[in-house]
Image (tube, rainbow, N blue to C red):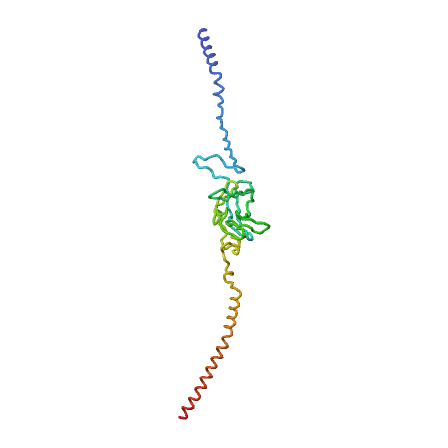
Length: 250
């Protein structure tokens, strides 16, 4: 009997030793761990414009936060000088300046940087000195002071592609002022090989004098014709009277 008791006590002690560390865990189950929310993907900074790098599950990238709209881009005349009037509207950037690139299909582009977001700039090839235009794009002045067509800025006429860049950029095509515009070309009287209409119509002094004499003679011809007509009428009446008298006498 005592032997059985000792065996039972030994089994209980062994069970207690095995189950002791497990019992607290079974008595108080722990709450499941909650994963921390994922941090948003960092933005990539291009210049001073931020573009998100996270891509949705559908594979389409989110729209950019940087945009540039061209509100105005047209040729105007600043007095006698051809110019480009422009205005751009950037989105997603704090930049207050724009770079304008005039694209030359056959050579080096012309770049103007640090310009305000809206304003007016002279057309490439235009030279203004003390407010007076002394050179026009597409024209070359000869030693005698006259002008002939073609120079290094022929590519800017009649149309040219222009790019406005803030971040990002936008391009458009602008047209040079029409030939009829006062700022498009040098004065016609100074263009080589062009004869002004007034010069063609102008006649030598002797021819002008003869024309004046002819004009005066023509002006006095009307009274003379009237007088001649009256004389013919009177003559006809005088001739008719004797004829009538002879008729009655007969």
